[in-house]
Amino acid sequence: MNNIKLKRFTAYLIDLIIISLLITLLGQIKFLNPFESKYENVAKEYETYYEDKFSDSKSLSLTDLTEKKYLNLIHDLSYYSMSYTIIEITVIILYFTLFPLFFNGQTIGKKICKIKIVNNIENKKLSFINLLIRTILYPIWTSIILYTTLSNIILLLSVIFFKGIVYFYTNLIISIVFAIYSYIDVIMLFAKDKSLHDLISNTKVIECK
Image (cartoon, rainbow, N blue to C red; front, side, top):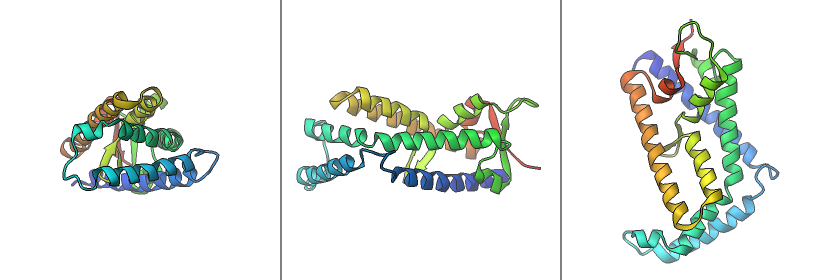
């Protein structure tokens, strides 16, 4: 791994820790997360239902996963976590867009690691649009899953407008498509020094002099 890749990876981890802390802290504010108690109730109901229905199953069939009760619980879990999702989307967009816009192409992580985002066109200033596109397509790692802010926004809309089997398949397709995109993005970065989100947003990351 060359120096710039190592710095990008380190900056990425620092930034993820910062935004995770911010999201968690804001999620504890009742005013910003009014459905927390309803979410906890549905989560308990889901846990009980899952243990009763699937605990002895060696494998789950599509019929099991598309049963009405199960679909309703899955939908309600997402619906009552909407406010938390909105907090997450807002924090990520503000952090990864405004910090680089006002602080010379740098987030806190990039500042520590002495790298910065610049416009891919020489002598052209980094714009809000460049950074916004880059941010919504920026892979975010949580547990073992990679997702993007764009997929979070689309999933948020799907839980508002869809229910039942339509929501199930919409959620499944969106999750798979953006997970594939995210892993391709990461692979390209390590294999070719240029990620998909850099190419699409017309940006690049360089070391500070």
